[in-house]
Image (cartoon, rainbow, N blue to C red; front, side):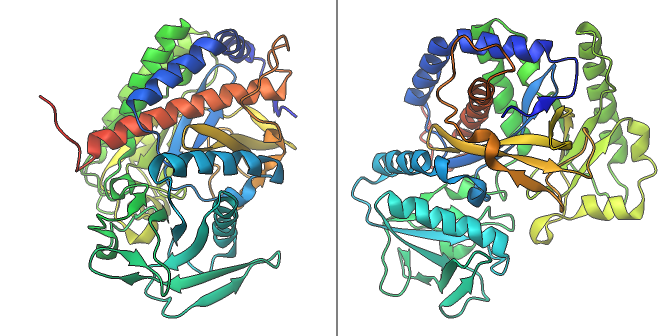
Length: 431
């Protein structure tokens, strides 16, 4: 099932799909050479928007939740990718410790943890879940809506290692994005593999750094394919020192929004696109769909109401927002059951392992869909995205459409690997 595009502007995307399918051997070789030079993040998920005239990633998550939204058909691929990833890092690994987020009563989130336990169990590891939440003082078993259980155990830190009672892991998998900063208990673990590394957390990571790296990747990829990189790259700017509650730094923000919208208008004119451009203002280190607003005109920033200011001022774990990224808004012209939808692609190591549609019946084509009320439709990615069907008409074949999404998602994953190299505190510097 290919969710229908509701716009007549499917021409450029169908053209892009054809170009990507025709260049498949060159694309796969290009990625292969990149992965010889760079290390992919251990796992990641990418939100993609398809405007019909443009297809671009709008967010890349290095601590993906939502693994429970993948269908059973996707599990074998995830298990194989997990095996490959572990084999590369620690072939003799026997025990794996998963460190989840601290909101330990959210059963939807814990269903995602249960799925990760299942994947790594099937990959041949003993898996246990260790919580760093101060609320978990003893072994706690939580029953999920479908009858599954997740057992959370308090972690034990010795001088050089982290583990549980009678459980010493060689590898620790973080499923906690460290929004509030890296806790001391996770620092200086020199004898164990910590995946992803601490500098992948939001205490260090910035969306503006990620999209700077993505811009570089998109230019090189666009040159290889002979396409305008704008077709796969959202333009952006960033602003530091904004205080939404006090109203300081808003002039700087307005001028960046203005400049960005002017650039997008020029692009729309060049391609004969009749849509109204918009920008999305997001917390530069934000997550969970928090601290996001849509702006169609810089003047809208003058009279923000109290509710919007509060929403923008603080994100997950009570972190205050002072730096924002202003991103070109990419419409989503995809619909599933008449609701606005966007594909989310999941990867482990360098492999696309599956994905689903995030849809929201109450949101518009220019709004953030990662919000309360969103639902998930996994049926679109029933087939592997690695096996396109040659000869099928563009826009008519699900495997071809999802192969294209997989390519865009892998470009974002490659950008994340550039970004992690640039912020690695242990990196060796060569002159």
